[in-house]
Amino acid sequence: MKIGNIDLGERPVMLAPMEDVTDHSFRLICKEQGADMVYTEFVSADALIRNISATTRKLHINPAERPTAIQIYGRETEPMVEAAKIVEAAKPDILDINFGCPVKKVAGKGAGAGMLRDIPKMLAITSAVVKAVNIPVTVKTRLGWDHDSKIIVELAEQLQDCGISALTVHGRTRSQMYTGEADWEMITRVKENPRLTIPLIGNGDITTPEKAAEAFSRYGVDGVMIGRASIGAPWIFHDVKLALAGKSPEEEPLSLSTKFSLLRRQIAESIENIDEYRGILHIRRHLAASPLFKGIPHFRDTRIAMLRASTHSELNAILDRIENEILPAINTAGEINHNENQE
Ligand SMILES: Cc1cc2nc3c(=O)[nH]c(=O)nc-3n(C[C@H](O)[C@H](O)[C@H](O)COP(=O)(O)O)c2cc1C
Image (cartoon, rainbow, N blue to C red; front, side):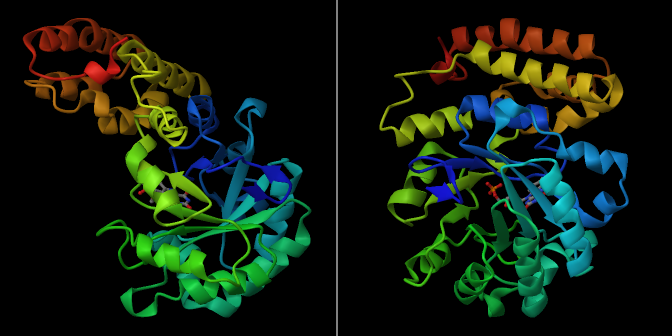
């Protein structure tokens, strides 16, 4: 699959853009684990233009994480064009436009998925941004505003006519937010449209290597994008790429200690990038979501301590105890099976 001149190989797997999650160190880890392309968290066009430092910092790309898409959102054409030029100067591989964010503070103001209620404006912004920059422009959106307006098949064609180089569809409507299940049949309908020639990236509820493989084999997308299942588990890209290469997890298993090392590295880099207090706050979402800490008997107090730890050394000591005392004791007693994680 190619986006513009960027060759992402066969059946590429992308790290989804996620606010407060996909910073450059997480993106790099996901890339190392096998993600073929990564996205920044969304960046406000208005904040970019105002040169807000917390926003411009989001444009930083580590060369090793490439290819990287920087994603922007906004609600008016002119600021979006101006922001697109600022983004282009930061030299991402791709510029992605967010027309999918459902949260009130964005969609309620007409940006993100809010644009699904004003298609002419969405198309005007897209055309203007495509014309304004020399890098490939892509769009990420949803099926439509609500159940009665699943317009994505027609919209995909209209966006293609604006000159975008690829489209990502999250198989939910704005009204669904994150509830229900992603509708992959609808994503297939977009792909089956013979007039659609740009690559289609499918997104929504890819939580296992099997689901990723099915997205290609059954639903026919050109690429898949993984969001929530990577939080606290960047190694999902390793597992997915292995499965797509036709190998079983036993052929190249990732050890439990490798997984703990990845989480420790995330913590250290998060602290280095911000500061100890906010770095730990930032990483709690990953620790809370990580499958490493699921299903451990009598874990409640340790879990609370892990999610309340406020210094790096305190947090590391808790992780050491989980890795070296709690999990081995459980494995010996046979109460929990982390066998697939063992070296
Ligand atoms: C914490 C969080 C932050 C998100 N931020 C963004 C964002 O900045 N831009 C965007 O296009 N989508 C964003 N999304 C949506 C994801 O990119 C993705 O479309 C959605 O989570 C569905 O994919 P999944 O089922 O693999 O998680 C976010 C999702 C989550 C959970």
